[in-house]
Amino acid sequence: MTEIIDKKLIQRRRIMKYYIEATYKIMEEEGIDMVTIRKISDIAGYNSATLYNYFENLDHLIAFASLKYLKSYADNLINYTKKSKNSYDKYLRIWECFCYYSFQNPVLYHKIFFEEFGNNLNVALREYYAIFPDELTPDDDIDLKNMLLQYNIYDRTAQSLEKCVKDGYLNQNDIDKVSELSLLIYEGMLDRIISKMWKCTLEEATERTIYYISKSIEAYKIND
Image 1 (cartoon, rainbow, N blue to C red):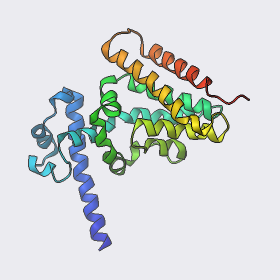
Image 2 (image 1 turned 60 degrees about the vertical axis):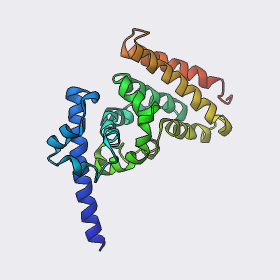
Image 3 (image 1 turned 90 degrees about the vertical axis):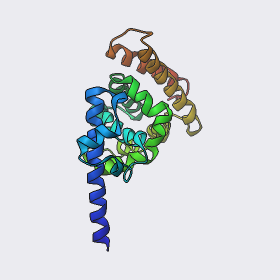
């Protein structure tokens, strides 16, 4: 019985993978606004009705496909954080990596993490990494892996601050405040990039964001 269930699960994930990759292909080549069920089905090789056996609707499928845009960020987290001096430095390096890659695709990252569209990720995230396990951070950094598996950016930020509390850099009751400040600074920069209110290079935007995040944390750091 277990073997039958496993085969069905493997088949289900294989077909979901076809749909996700087809959707991502359209997003890359034509843009997210040009994604249609008919186009997806033609590329995936299944009829339109079959899609609803695996996804609730088109937005649900687009949410899955959008996670592919997190791959470069996830792939480089280890490189960004491996030289961290301590957990506080690691927190800033995590943000640096996230800023650098998200600012390259600001509209989509805003949709994923700050708009109603992102609610679909609550059910998509763990299923996605079961389908594409190679896109998750390697097991040699459990803290990063656990952070990536958090459902939303608020939980991710709080998760990455927990080690700072354990190491004595912050008080537990200040995590929510520090997390909120970091997110307000980041979202503000993301909005400015999207609206083109501030013309700057990718590196400048990242550097400025990390500077303000680090300054905001200093107000809550426990004195050595």
